[in-house]
Image (cartoon, rainbow, N blue to C red; front, side):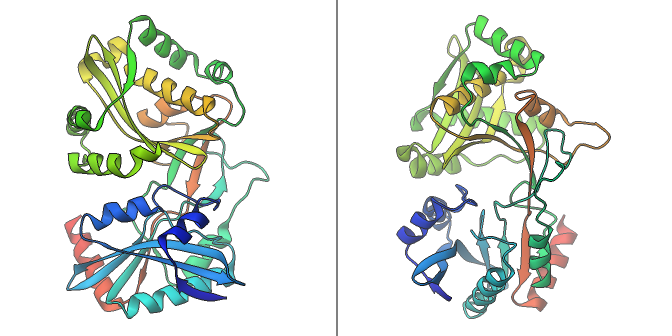
Amino acid sequence: MIFTEITPAEFTKFASKSPYKSFMQTEEIAKLREQNGWVSYYFAVKENDQIKAASMLVAKPTFLGKSTFIAPGGPLLDYEDTKMVNFFFKNLRNFIKTHNGYVLQISPYYEVTERDRNGALIENGFNRKKALQNLQKLGFIKESHPSQPEYMFAMEIASRTPDEILADFKRNTRNHVRKAERAGVKIRELTREELPLFKQITESTSERRHFSDRPLSYYEQMYDLFHEKGEVKFLVAELENKILSAAMFMLYGDEIVYLFSGSDEKYMKEYNAQYLIQWHIIKYAAEHGFKRYNFYGISGLPKDGDLDGIYEFKKGFDTKFGKVLEYLGTYELAISPAIFHLHRILSGIKH
């Protein structure tokens, strides 16, 4: 095996076939980071001239002149393969050390357990504890403020028809969809010039629900990077030219990911437009051969049957084929231990 830098084209070809692929591990995301001062790299492990593992990384000086290295949504490899994990990260660590880096952060799109829609472990389902053990043995520390949700909720689309999927909605969810349709709510896709309208909705929602929103420039950059390839959609639900709800979706590989959204609070209960947007994109997924629709993050596993509102909303769209996805999480590896631990201390004080 050899560890080597590769071209973006080589990486893209490998990533498109990887079972661990994510829109975060793409040349487009690297370009997004580059527009904000980061430098990108592409690495692979090759055996007999065939790529066996790879990663897109970005780096930027962030603390005391030292650089943070990040593999968003990656690296792409089997974390239960101890030999590969050790070889990949030993060589990557050496590269980072010689390039003024003090920390490596990873957030693999790698499921560690198989769970049902209620978050319970499936009997005889996969449980990849060895992946966690391999990272911990190398010195990786789990980050308490992950860059990617550790738990997500998704539904299998597979070969189901839209009518079959709608029949598996929770009754209240299906009623909300029909109510919005009867009211005349329509779904359409925004142009780039209309993205400020999307931003208005997400900004007001973030203020109401106390979470941070992305700047308009982020949405514009994502549109520029992914829209021509058909890999991003900004949808709005409208009634008489009034935007009631809006959502952003990533279409990558064989899944669609629900990423950001917002709704006008004044009309949420009256029209339930947020439900109609979900039904529109789920139906699109079924009609265009996607295998999975990923509702993205939930706050965690339910405790004693208690669901938060976001999880309950997402869970209502699939009573049979929905499931909780548990990922490895975000991990950090100290390259320069003294600087790394100083940064963690200061970050802890800040939080």
